[in-house]
Length: 179
Image 1 (cartoon, rainbow, N blue to C red):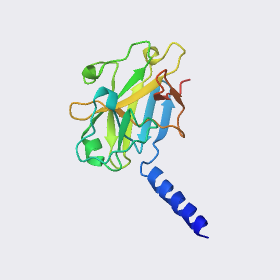
Image 2 (cartoon, rainbow, N blue to C red):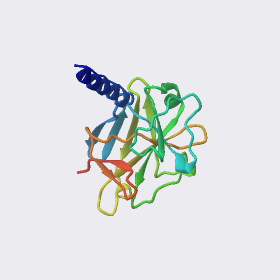
Image 3 (tube, one colour):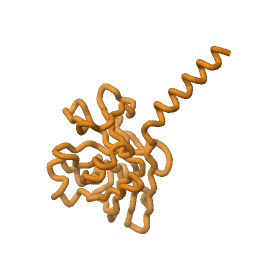
Image 4 (cartoon, rainbow, N blue to C red):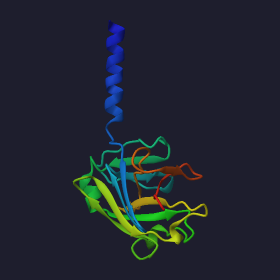
């Protein structure tokens, strides 16, 4: 009986610990070349190897599976930080190239997005063009936000809603449904 209780207690603790960050979900609408993608239950991924530091006072998680590299901040816990960020979409490995962080506000290859504080969601709408595609024809989306003087990545859904692929470094990218 004691062993069963301990196992139940451990299971409950693990369930609480792993549910602290809501799993992001993806909804995509494609009409002709018009695409709208919504990443709900989003958050920010700060890269330690790039000296990115989450905002002071933010609740920080190591939920990406790379605890030596990433620190995450869930918009569920930090809606004010997320609402105050400027959100962007770039296209990884695209034929048109990948704009740097310094060009987010001015580069026409960057799609400015909005943040829906009620859904904790990044919302991006854009017209699909061939320059956004990789050599193999995929449209690999890379979501990010500008928070202060840093540009952390935004959560990428790992399952459910939209297709996801990983790049050579193991970073996930949502794939736009194309026709």
